[in-house]
Image 1 (cartoon, rainbow, N blue to C red):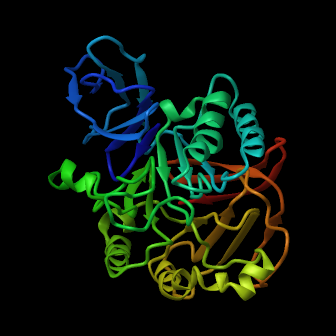
Image 2 (cartoon, helix red, strand yellow):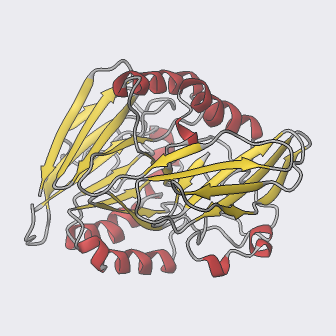
Length: 381
């Protein structure tokens, strides 16, 4: 599976049924010399052996190729297509497929039909909760890897920008980290810190980062692990030249600032209403202050969108859109627990979103798993 983390770095995870002698990841540009990366290894069990490699920085050119080989065998060549700001960047947005592989397959079939046989998204933005239990091998295989392989194979050539959900990572910082496949999502573009010892002892575990997709700048936050480090990172990134000069400013965080649908018992009796309070009380005022255009979340298993005015006097469009896209397969949330009196659209079924970004235009189209358009809006700069 292919991930993009930070500007111009890619993270590849693969596994074999037995240990693979001296595997290497090779990557290269068209007609250019090849670079070889030695992966690090983690044994999942006797028949699942995981390898992980990070490559980059990748130049701003249109194609990057990679494959995995050892002294005997090689995968086929995979090609990552990279788009410029003036080109159409097609982003598939999904979230919360965990514990719902049957419905996830239906959503993936709808995605295939939407894009057609001759086209596909350039990037996947997964806004969290890919599996129910990160320590369960069967969860990873049944809920994420098998549906992706069976229905699309997108995960080989379409980079996934992954936003951690409350089900996606083990918050402990110990060597016996239970996260079987995403336990090293930390500091991927800070190569001085990528020592294997740090990976082994579990100290690498930071999900938040930022990157550009065409003319948009995206900040990825970790809703589960609030910290002084993340708060400082967010303020720094919101003020940065890269974010402020982007035509479109996007934040992706798993737990929405404003939740309306949930299990009433968990919400009221188990204090689950407080899970994301720091996002609403601390982060959202910063989103509005620094003129964020779009906040994308999952967590709540249905679709909602709200476009409201910034609380500050913005020199730009003057609005912020909150979108909840938690409908990629998990059991739906159908019971209302709050009413913020702000959402323009509510859809209580499974879905995905096609986010198209090209130069001065951003187009957002929410589509049901059966192919019906349930919502659309556009921004122009």
